[in-house]
Length: 153
Image (cartoon, rainbow, N blue to C red):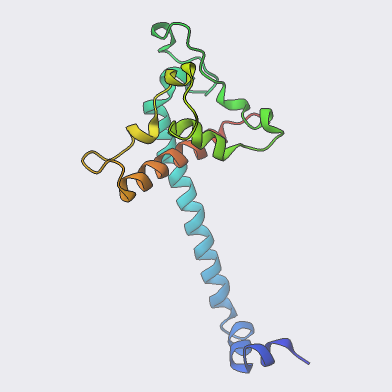
């Protein structure tokens, strides 16, 4: 007794498992490649924002030794390459997102050493609209995906 005929019909089974199965496999491969390309593009965009906005303090390697530290007396940027290591081998995506956004954690004195990118990345003239919030979150998430690539084993 076959499972497919009773649930989806013989025609569906024949199309899925017959000559059209190549089409299904092809479509799956296309979807996979598009997803991989999208992720790579997000990382590239994140790297660009990281280079423009974060390297000054965190350095190109993310270890916290950026070229602007000489003007930031007393500021010690985090070593972004050990976030996973400090979190039991799991990258703390949400925690990093909250830290970069800056608006979700209770502000403390040293929190003001880092810009609130959730505000800075808002679209001019559309600040705090759902569209602007979504785009700011997307930029922050892309930076985080790039930071995730910097993690030490």
